[in-house]
Image 1 (cartoon, protein in one colour):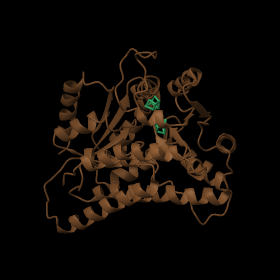
Image 2 (cartoon, rainbow, N blue to C red; image 1 turned 30 degrees about the vertical axis):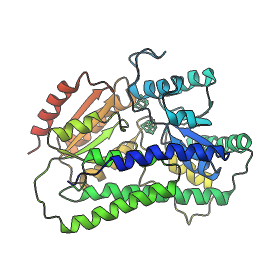
Image 3 (cartoon, rainbow, N blue to C red; image 1 turned 180 degrees about the vertical axis):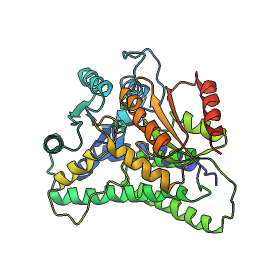
Image 4 (tube, rainbow, N blue to C red; image 1 turned 90 degrees about the vertical axis):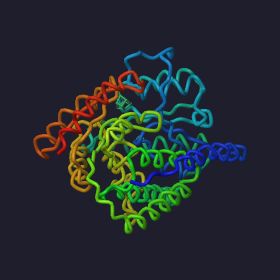
Length: 380
Ligand code: SF4
Ligand code: SF4
């Protein structure tokens, strides 16, 4: 694989903080989001800047959250209340969803602190029922009304359709980049793939991030033609809880042990990329969005068959040799759902499978390394 100069992307992200501050001086509004279920199109159509508030950095245990809580929730909360995240500070409003129990209760406390306007959407958790669709559509309508009142604007259908086009383009570009690793040998390490796709999520202008990803993918597509490297590689698919820069230790360990994370199914990876809205469909754009978001195969959904279907396709498309399922400590949904993933990967696909439960600290790195080495030895 070719190594990228990641400082370019890191610098872009940092420069964007200044850009956002200048935009705010000219009265632009920034809206922080915490989850893939947040309807980004509504924020774009409102003329505001959507910003992912990641929660991928370890925070001290002193914050008023239980110690044995998912590190992602602790991080999201800790960065907010300690004012250590420039993106949270920049946000005028933050939007949360009732996904897992930990997150929804965390949002209650965050709201009670009054540091920011916190708006929480009620996410139904049975993806296929009419009642869920009706409820989620109503939630989208409520968010639209909230944003219109709060920002003193009107969100038109035309603006929503334009926003749908932008988010479709974002998904198309990201998929183009991720698809580079369908080739054998893979073109990019999992760490580089994560770094680039993560850093560009913080750019204020979606067109800029689309262009950067397209340019990078185009560059690699050309390189691949001239590459004659046929070195055998162990190709790993990472599934499970979300990973970002700061919480990438599992990817780092896998690659230090000589394998490559060629594909990531989790949020930030492939989870939503295929769920694009048909831009020729003239139905109510909010209905199209509600239908699309309910298809996201997150473990908070019950049942969550979409994840199994997506994994099956990815194992085939990326010529996967083994599947690694990451569970953040105290995440019940991913932890328990691992039963179905293990069953499918081992019994139906006949591949080595490993579930790892960990947090953001480095205290278990050597134990994890031993387990990953043993897992990789199972791959011929
Ligand atoms: S894993 Fe589920 S709850 Fe977490 S960010 Fe993704 S969609 Fe949201
Ligand atoms: S990893 Fe699990 S517990 Fe943590 S925020 Fe996501 S769904 Fe909730």
